Image (cartoon, rainbow, N blue to C red; front, top):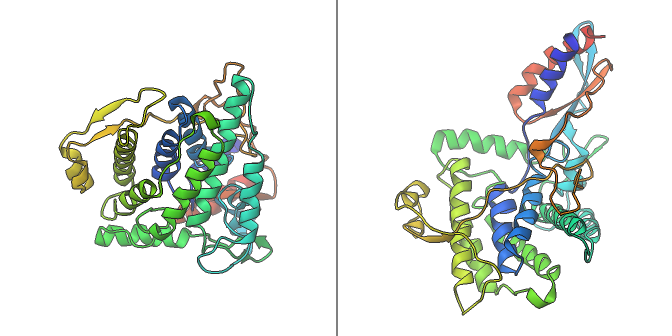
Length: 364
């Protein structure tokens, strides 16, 4: 019973994310519309975007801070040097191991990004191989996009690679300031806060999507069109709660895609679901451009369940894959160990660490 109680406590601590950089409005919504604009069919664009955002949804790949705690008879003993970024932050979210030059992506991050894209197969002959290829591309794009919002958050943490906190401090401070002033100032996850990096992040995303699309059906996205999408996202949501901002930016991305697909006599390879927004959306989003706007409806994501190397657990012969919500129970960690690794997402979770380590000791 004590072991089960300890397991539940640790799962609760591990259940939320930290320092994940760009959120669903970039990793999913913007990626989806850029894939459609580059010529990918709707179904393929959905898989790519779902895999991209899926890196932030799966426990195996989501960014996290880790702390090693040692159980003892005196409640708990904490190693001051054990609070650090998880290795997967460097691998999938492109934090740098070094401080680097301000405003420049570090060489080690460029190497990680290159490795991700090198693992994307050039082609696939079967539906199963095609879906696997799309998921790999989505995971590679996630790292590439994160590299831009993480560009100034490299460093080291004692014997651990990467800075001790990533940009958790800025994210926490942003939440506090927003609660007081109703405006975002510090959170680099927010495309309007870290907007100076966004144009190049979108440009590189579009370049990779176009490069991996079959030449016969690929489309180039003009620079001015990419700039329009960037400007729309950079100007959105500074005075909105994050969950509202993500929805509003989804509408903006859908509006951009509708205008892109219906300008210049472009033809569509497959029909998109079109909707007209209710007048109240513009008021909620504090954005007059969304007043009764016609948009492409961006479908709901289908997050693949990812292994610790960000590859999918199961892709079937017909190209369908195991969803994150279809996951089976993962093996229960050994809580009889004297040292317990805990992933942290909120500062107040530190308060639970003594209880967790005490239960771990008692369960022995």
